[in-house]
Amino acid sequence: MKKIAFCFLIYDSINCEELWNIFFKNVDINKYSIYIHYKTNKQLKYFEKYKLNNCIETKYEDQTIPKAYNVLFKQAYKDSNNYKFIIISGSCIPFKSFNFIYNKLTQDDKGYFNVCPKEQCFPNCEPLLDHISKKYISKSHNWFILNRKLVENLCINKDEILDTQFKNIYAPAEYYYITYINLLKLDNEIITTLNESNNSTTFTNWVGVNYKFPCYRSLKNYNSISSEEIEHLLHSECLFGRKFTRESIMCFINKTYIDAISSN
Image (cartoon, rainbow, N blue to C red; front, side, top):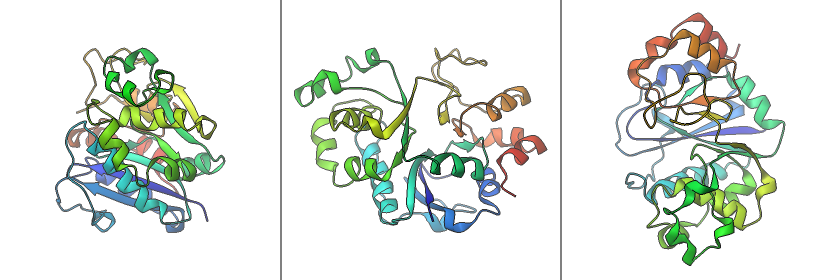
């Protein structure tokens, strides 16, 4: 049976762990796998048993972040039933039910990327020009979905590439995967959106993106959210959303949201 691998990259907690527990409740355990890479080993309430035992040291927005992604993906790849691989942060919450997500992701064999405008690559990526032609260099949001072929080509034994080519690139996870998809001519393996907010697979409220409830300062961290905005996100294309703090969870403890993410 095809499985979906949920690959969590967290600091020490899953902010809204209770919502994820509801999300997975009543779901056939043969349809999913969970893997958790942590920075600090703090006890989780529901998902402690899914923690990896080979987590690596990470630093903010350097090449250790995609290396940690790859630790997750490499472990998940060992299970031949894992069909799609989703990278998820500790601040993510679901906006669709497991059944909806499973049906959507198993009906095709593609990965999903939310691609940024090319002009956002430079000058940050100037050091990459020593290794890769400018025509291949691209940027994406770093919360994406891979298929097995992409994991095999991008995530296994790639530390040397990340250390040599991406060491001096800020936020290399935003560049490595999509750039190497271009370089290795794997673009037919992905479905892309163009810098979308709530119509990509993972919603993020960045300043400057087209969104009904715009953010006016960099990236919005949600300590609270209106019922109107929740309804909007539940009916949009996004499967997940970030950045939601622990404090925001009370906004989601209502019948509308719980019914929307539950699989019965």
